[in-house]
Image (cartoon, rainbow, N blue to C red; front, side, top):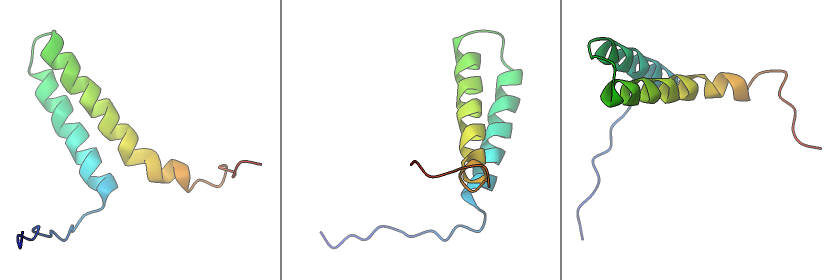
Length: 67
């Protein structure tokens, strides 16, 4: 019960880490033949790219609170 989680201080932002992950996933996918595994990697890359841009979208001046 006395076990404590190891805390890690991140040196890069979440957006940077997700963008890097997307790049790595695309590189891995490019080395694979067409198929399920490649499509899965590309899907994960798209999700990571979306996550990397979320804070930009949320802080954009065009975003308005609901009325």
